Length: 234
Image (tube, rainbow, N blue to C red; front, side):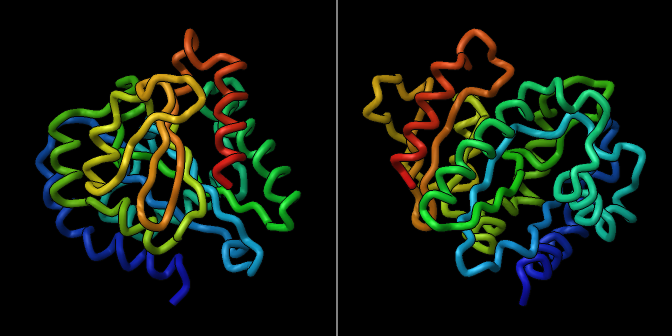
């Protein structure tokens, strides 16, 4: 079974539960974040890198849960894989850093004779409606954890070679929820664990960084040092 078929099956297996749990919520939430992988993921030389953000700032808020299970993955494909981005995309601090890592790591992967494949994900699958600002509602987080805990299974399906969590230390509890056995430790590059952490879990290695909107800390030196650490992990 193709990875996208496995992902769709995963989402559908949870859909009744998450739909029923959200049905009576008065909070204005974004549609659940359903991902889709490109065909290049099955290239024998593919080197898969998954980059996590925190959550979407609005995500097809005008849709309904009933229709979303059928169109959520195609809309991800249209937005991310086919690069039909929103107006102002180029100003986003997250996407600026995403493209930096994509560009630099692509060169490093190609130098090793591999083919880079990047997958975008979020550590929280259900954000707020766009007009309500960033972050997630605590009760929606609870609902997601109880009814739509799919991230660890996504990684089992996709099997990334490297993960980058640009989620910040305050979201480590979300990472630990999805990966209870994960080891979050300090690099040997002089950064405190809160600023930059190495992640080790059976099946993937990675790094946890500040969220790029933390301008005072996500400096050029910081991103370059993170890049050097990532290259050493490859």
